[in-house]
Picture 1 (cartoon, chains in turn purple, blue):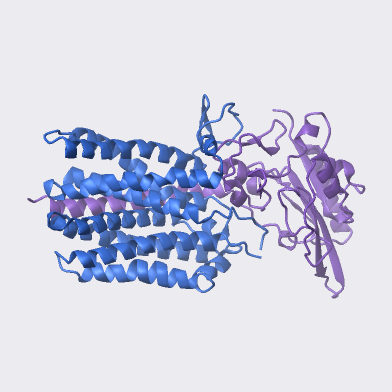
Picture 2 (cartoon, chains in turn blue, red; picture 1 turned 180 degrees about the vertical axis):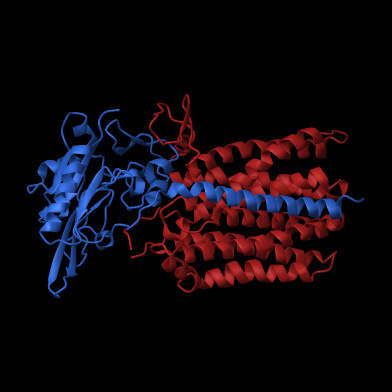
Length: 255
Length: 311
């Protein structure tokens, strides 16, 4: 396995130009969609099967009551423990040698389990092909020594691409600097490899709580439930089995 | 509230979950009646094994219609060029892959395996019916016991499958698998009782026996349904209380309380407890139809409420 790569999105540098969103559309040849009015400059409301990079425009009042814009370029998190990948019954979703998560379109059978298993609502179902789509981390570019198109296009280096360990060190330094500058709520999201989902390979620097950006505060791997749920099902099965045994033996055995 | 997406599985899938549960429940009840029920419950065995096969036939069709292209079902089980990086627990055997942490993959295997056993048991009953003097009891015991495990699995796995999603209603309750299994058992028992009620006098004895399967499984369904709702509500997770409210007081509350609880559980429980040992076949049939309807509705309403995208 090659060294793990990552994308680091620093929301404090985002100016909301959407160059990343356009670059992603162009490189991945994603068709246009009907615009969606969300009440802000944001378009669309959420990821779609044709929008893998999405700049969120979140309007919020600050302490003094002045309007404040939270801008954030959101993307698939390429989780180290990925709910979509574990859920996939076909093996279409796989981990590349760079640590990213990708969907093999030839194998995907359109069951949509990954769509509901993603803790971030990233994976989207494409009704034209009948298959699931999400950010590929520009898999083709990656295999040719290039970073993803969104990071390449970002004019402010809000999105940066590199090896995970190097990016994480830079992110930790950046969050300290921002705190010194007075951004009290500045925090990293998904940088910690001992944290939720084993860390995210696309991690973020946020200026407020994750929920402000529509991110779960404590994302969980859905498959952690399988063991306990199965044990309780076995318990239920034992009760049914014993009940039926008693019913037929006690009252039915006698001729 | 985190931004989530929904698979938006249609009613086809709810109906598949219902039929799979019914087939599994009927099969297990038939196996137990065969093993310990003696000659008196021979009709339960016949009806149960035939029912399991008949209920299972539409299952793969429903799934394939949902996927769109028939060959796509095979992808659940095997692909031409397997990859070793498809999950932390994945087992690759040639082109075949088994993913214990993916309940959908395991369910596809269970459906395949259970199909084989339902065919064998139904065949054994059929051959004995058409050729008097044949005794295929040994084959039926073997296929019945092995298939029984698959039947239980098929009834329960949809609940575990839903539990392993990020949907707040499904993810935060721990008893969905247990509930789905209980619903499978009540549906299987009700379907057997319904057919026995039409068979007339020869099934009279078995009919009163079935009551002692139906009442405990209905009670188990009540308990697991309550535990499911309580565990979701108590989890305190993001969106959990909101999605329970959809079910118990929101747009789905009518279907839930009236359909799944009153029609599907309370009325049949009263009917089953009230009726005397022999009971009238008409009353049994009514109670069975209500249980079947309630079993379908409880699965439908949980699926529907859980798949609503909250904002």
